[in-house]
Image (cartoon, rainbow over all chains, first blue to last red):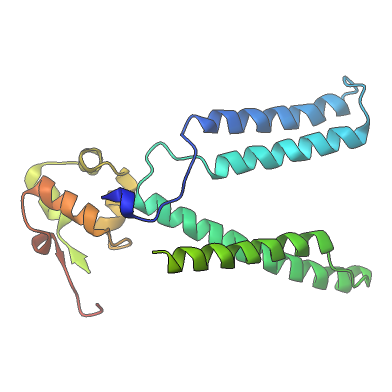
Length: 133
Length: 66
């Protein structure tokens, strides 16, 4: 019966270990660089560690809990929705804070671009699921 | 929506953990349902009904707000 219900396609629970592993390695990479144990360009370290952290957080966010039931599903959907709203509000308030303290009225275009893409993806996904129920 | 899960659990001498195991959810989910913080799906309501051996109507009842 549950096959007919809407659900999130999540990774198996074991992926949590992979997610935490990548997270630890990414942070460790920065520490080793700070301790001068790595002879690599600083820019490369930052890019690799930031991508590592993003990938690890994505894996952790989309991995099933040990017990994944309908309440977990509901909480997960709520958390995703709130994060999305928080992202938009953060970009707007960040602009206002910049204006308040540094007089630079500059909007973070990359953040706006990502949020616009997320909105477009949201509307496409929402309407395609809504009309194909 | 009000429910009698806590009473039914006591009758069957089941802990929240044991009931959760029987219907494949977490203990926190049972706790949320018992305290009316979460209204379960029909599937879950029927699973509860099966465990307690009574009808869904005997476990869940609409209240004035519904």
